[in-house]
Amino acid sequence: MDEIILLAYLRGECSDEEAERVEAWCEEAPENRKVLEQLYYTLFVGDRVAVMNTVDTEASLKNLKSAIREKEEKNQRKGMPVRWGRYATVAAAFFTGLVVAGGITWGLLSNKLSDYEVLTIAGQRAQTVLPDGSKVWLNASSRLVYHNSFWSSEREVDLSGEAYFEVTHDKYAPFIVNSKQIRTRVLGTKFNVRAREEENRVVTTLLQGKVQVDSPRTESNGYVLKPGQTLNIDTDTYQAELIEYNQPTDVLLWIKGKLMFKQNYLLEITNIMEKLYDIKFIYEDETLKTERFTGEFSTDSTSDEILNVLMHTHHFSYKKEGRTIRLRKR
Image 1 (cartoon, rainbow, N blue to C red):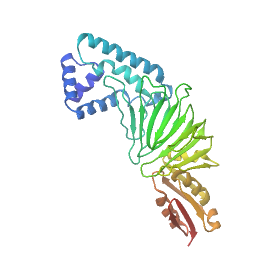
Image 2: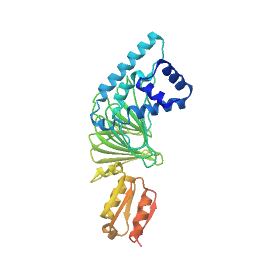
Image 3: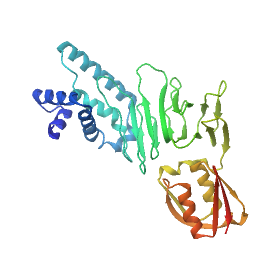
Image 4: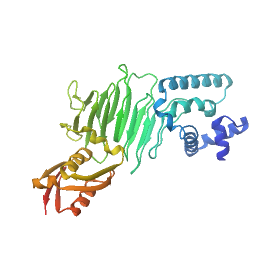
């Protein structure tokens, strides 16, 4: 199908004959629909990143629902299929808050509002605004699905990977993050959740507000976190460890994508790495703590990659024992 005709269709500028051709082509194969979805993104969302912080998602959602209902009623009377192009403009206003910092895909509209999905691949990060107005920063190799519902009183998302959330407050609609059978429940707050597929744990760090974390083995009210606390739950045994860091915001360094050290003590560097990689360092020689290092790393680097560089600039070695790393002088 000619891309020019597809773009004209989404803008509502094509003839009835061309519109019928596009709709028939779209129904022929799922791949064709994907092409149309991607063009929709390029046309209506890609050039609107500057207004992310001003988008009125609630008003846009109401307008979107109203426009879809009106179009459905009109087409039911005429016996015609619903066309994307007729309500694409108001749909575009609703999705205006999307900001791309990496590769993302999401579910779009057919005859109903589908789930909202954001994906990132290795080395990419994404920032987006969810339909409820909450802001999310997604780390590399992560997947987030926001379940749209016209009836549920809860706002639920499924997370695989790592994400930082700034949740829009709504006391009547709790915000719930589902990760490996761990549920993090909030009303309005700022927090980070890491639930990577290759790790047997879910790590939740609260920066502001209040969250409740539940697992299949927690009782009644689960674990309630205070700002500055990190809860580490083993997803095999469901044993939990509560940690308090002096600088909990270090867990958000991945958002920038870089770790920069300039004459930092090794102790400062390992403290940051403990939060980023959920590992623990043990110094077999206390004098190593005051050794200074300078360097720049990607937050996508593994802990081994960083340590291998550091140990070649100074004379120390390390040994891994599970999630514990022992440092010694050579």
